[in-house]
Image (cartoon, rainbow, N blue to C red; front, side, top):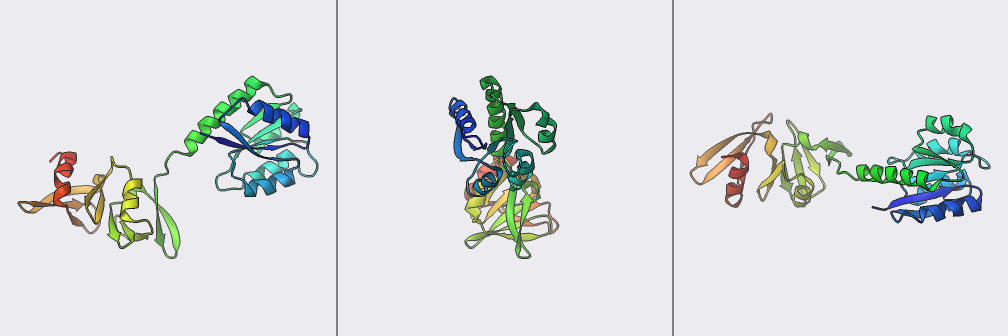
Amino acid sequence: MTIKALLVDDEAPARSELRYLLGSHPEVEVVGEAASAGDALELSRRVAHDVVFLDVEMPGLTGVEAAPLVRERADPPAVVFVTAHERYAVDAFAVEAFDYLLKPVDPDRLARVIERLRERSVENVAPVEKVPVVAGGRTELLDYDQVHYVQADGDYSRVHTYDRSYLCTASLGELEERLPAGRFARIHRSYVVNLGKVAGVRRPAPDRFCLQLADAAHTELDVARRQSRQLRERLGL
């Protein structure tokens, strides 16, 4: 996994030295450099990045003053201060610094920071268990556990919760791929069901059965014949 980094320091030799040290870590890609906090803020708006290595003492805004602005994104990058002065440590962590490196940067200390950044990146790409739906002209995010079943609706789909339904601009097939297979099952070409919301089973005919859901309407959904055997096994029938 690549960690994209910005280097911000008003001294070009300091940026070069840090770039050289980061070159020993193939998982890190330096995607930009800036010589001032102002330039860094402009760069951060244009370039995707995961971490900013930020000097403290710079012309104009200091690194400590710039850090909260750098982190204003919805997915804020980690900020690692790189400075020759220990006295800024308290101020750095007051603005939620990820770490604090002293110049000259010790390669072993940097390696530990990179390892922590790698762990942070892995955590950040963990799947988010939300389904985006449209309600009242705005997008809402539903937890997977709120979903009782999903119904095909042309090129889109309709997500049903306990007592409401929502339009989702993803197709039923797209949602089926996104939803965890251990909890959801395709029971029909038009339906994907949360198996945790199944309250019972009814057999309207010898060769058919329906799932009864634990929603407000006690919804019943037909199970297609080709899905019935696998579904019976999953439900222990």
